[in-house]
Image (cartoon, rainbow, N blue to C red; front, side):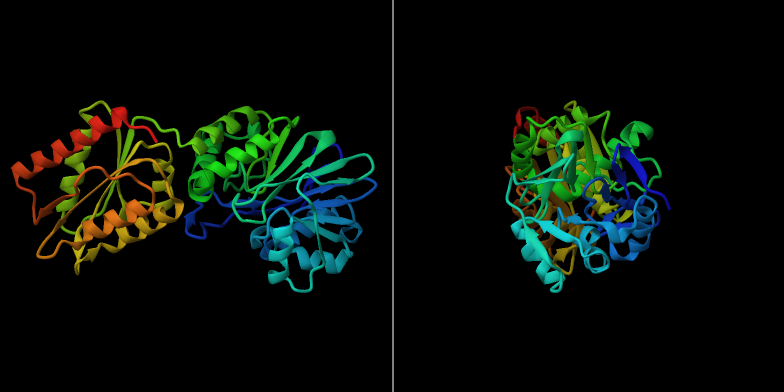
Length: 393
């Protein structure tokens, strides 16, 4: 396995995980990569490592450029184990000093008590002779320890989990792969990992706005060099919570009643000129749902009641959404029930805790909707559509 030079004296030496299909609850049908970067010169610097299970790929790629024992310095931008998992083995092999943020040093000590780590200050620099590294703390993007590293002379921002995507590819740059696939995966990545931290990302973008960034070398997926402006604009829009005239109707059903309600509500929303996505969660994936939620103005969720509780697939997606907190969106809850109707009340609680605004009363129907009740569902959708026209986060 060979390194790939991304500019003079800087090589991608990461690992490709072709078969990964789940990343802590987030589906990854295109696999992923764990990106690490080797800077060679008067000092040899490794920017991040890889998951322990693909350590051999990292060592083999480094070995195609230099002897891994010749690494002088390792930068740890983030403590999470898909990036730090090989740190201890590399330090034991090379004796290299490890640099991290103050929070990174604290976190690494809990993962690897034997690891020797030096903390670096925000905006601190390291002189490599012909090159200079600058460190920019980015707390909660997406852990407290996270930071960017900027290679000043080459304009490379090693942006850790910012701007990443879960894509396994032998291609390294954004202008070498299908742009639609790239943006689809970049959007899904933001929606499922970084969505709760929009304000933090706006602050991070502000802190790097004056840098001469010629490459965004992220830690998963493809490196940005041609579409830097486009992905930064997208991140700015997502971080601000900007949304289109779109509603997502997420539901599940046992005997078809909640499906009928979902489809009639969707028809009502669409009759007001709105785009609508209707998703049955048991036939779908929670991370793809959040991809659709990211730019939606309204999130409408429906569940049947089972044992006076939420239907389990809806409990799953509602809990997942609660953690990602798509704040400021219009929300509405509906569902069918037999003798006890606790599901919709429970669903509303999850949605409110996720930050959705819930101005409408819940819509509940016992057993199968009658023709008159189906009209009520359509009208409910129309009311949602009317609210969407004037809704702002």
